[in-house]
Image 1 (cartoon, one colour):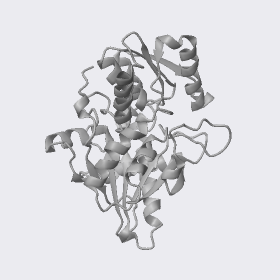
Image 2 (cartoon, one colour):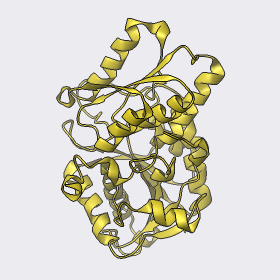
Image 3 (cartoon, rainbow, N blue to C red):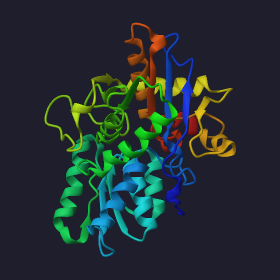
Image 4 (cartoon, rainbow, N blue to C red):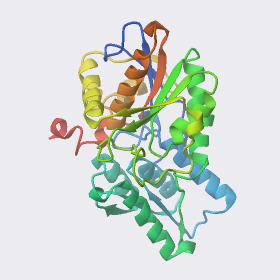
Amino acid sequence: MEVDEDEIGDTPLIRLEGVGEPDGASIYAKVEWFNLYSTPYGGGSVKSRPALYMIDEAERSGELTEDKTVIEPTSGNTGSEVAKIARNRGYDVTIVMPDNAGEGKVKTVEETGATVEFVDAMEGYDAVIERADEILASDPDAYYKPDQYSNPANPRSHEETTGVEILEQAPDVTGFVAGVGTGGTITGVGRALSGEARTVAVEPDSAMHAIDGLKFMREGEHIVPDIYDGSVFDDKLYISTDDAYDNARTLKERYDDEDPEVVHPGAHDEETLRDVMRVNQDFLTGTSSGCNLEAAIRLAESYDDPSEARIVTVFCDRGDKYTNNLWRDYFA
């Protein structure tokens, strides 16, 4: 698989209208599948940014050497992006993921030549992390684990790129919402937007959810990522799987006959915007994008005057990663 690391960052910003937002509110989304957009199965994702930062930092520090295998637990997107970058640089890679991960994510990892180890999704996502740690402990000198859950390069990637881009592309932003998986996006962007916008973290409303990439941390004994910094956001919203899926489908229907308004193209020309924005002419997002849209709408509804709401969120990945769940019927 050919990988051009220059395709990471400077993603487009679009405006969403007629998707359930209150009258007068402005809702925008960073379209993160434009990261590594020329790679298969919907290009990259919001995780392309931390994957690049973590591998770069590991090489600079000397933690990652040519004799080591890169190992990472993931729900899919970080794993596929780590695999792309690390394999492109010549490293062996092992990715541990739940067996219900999006089909496009799994195929991406496999096509890089990385090894995939599956964990029963019914054991919960923490079991994926624990299995990766078991493999690492079996031969610590043979592996390097980027560890998206504790690696400060993860939130730093968003503080230095995603957050900066938002301020440049939407300088009048009043609010930002993002789902919590590792906490990297909300922590990093929250730091970049400190004092500029209200920042809201988004979690699934149940431990038994099906919103890919997000982590339930509200109750019980769940692993809380070390990089998750609750001091950088102002509030939290809890979104159901049904609402996340419904919003993803609403986006497809809303933009059946027209493209979303491109507020800022980022690094991309009109031809690339046209070719990469859609899947087979349809506007298909991943499950977390539907979740983030629901949260953005709820935040806009909380304003006394919705016309003052200028909310930015993240569309993490494109729908062709989810041919086995969200868009199963569409691709059947």
